Length: 396
Image (cartoon, rainbow, N blue to C red):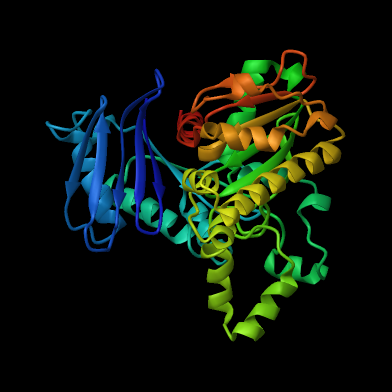
C-alpha cells in the first residue's frame, strides 16, 4: 500500500510518500512560498535532492506540482497516480468532535470547517489540501489525523478552565492541547523499546520552536501544557507560554494596541526571541550565551526552568513517573538543553547520565544511569509515519 502524507501550512505543503510494506519513504519534499513571489519546491528521492522554482498560486497548484514530480521520469518514483492508495492529512484542530483519525467524508469536512474558529490560522490550509486532493484524485480515500485528538482522553478536571461554565458550553473554551500525534508516537515507541512495565506513566517533552509536555498514563493523555491555543504552557521560540491574562489588558492599555496587536505580540514576538532579542533559534541562543550575552542566557534559563517545572508537576499529577521522553528539534538535538532540564530531577527518581547524553543528536538512546528508577530517553518523533499508519489501518 502506498500512502502520501500531506501537511498543509498557510504558505507551504510538506509531503512524504510511503510504501507501507517497509515502511519506507519513497519520496518527500516541501512546497514553499505558496501564493508569494519566489515559490519553489524541494523534492528528494533516493537521497537525491532537487530544488525547482515556479509560480505556485495556491495549494491546489502546489499539490498538482508535487504529484507531477512523483510520476515524472526524472524525479518520480511511481508510474501513475493509480499507485497511490490513500492520502493522510495532518489537521491541527478537531475540537471535541474528533477523538481519533477518521476517514474524510463530507460530514468530516463540515466538522473541520466548524473548528476554524478554534484554529483560524491552521485549519483553513489543512482544508485546502483536502479540497485539492479531492479534486485531483477523487477516487482516492483520504484520512484526517488531528493534533488535538490524542488529548481528548484528558479528564474534565484537567481540560476545564475556571471561568464561567456557560462559556465552555457556549464556545467550547477548554484545554485541547496540540502536538498530539508526536506525543502519541513517542509514547508508543517508548513502550516498544522499554516494555510496558516501565512505561505505565510517561512524560513526553516535545521541544522545538513550538513546545509542549504531556502526561500519559497507560497510553492515554491525562494532561498537556498547551491549551485552547498553542500559546499556553512552555516558553517557546516566539510564543510566551503561561502568562497572567491581566498582563495583556495592561499592555493593551499602556501601549494602545488592539486585539490583533496583542495576539501578534504573544504569538510572534515573545518567548525566546522576546527575552533574548537575539533569535528564536536554540543554536543561535546557545552561541550568543557562550559569548557572554546575558539576555540569551536568561532566555535559555527560562526555557529549561519551565520544562523542568512541568515535568515535576506532571509527576505529581500522575502520582509518579516511569519514563521521561525527549523529542522535537531541541529535545532530539540539544544535549545542553536535555542536561539543563534533567540534571536536577533526582527528586522524582531520575538519575541523569551526562556522558550518555553528550553529543547525541537525532537518535534513540537512553540517557539516564543504569541505576536510575526513572528512565530518560531520546526518541526522534515521526508524525508522518504515525499519520501513514493510521491511514493504512482505516483504509485497509
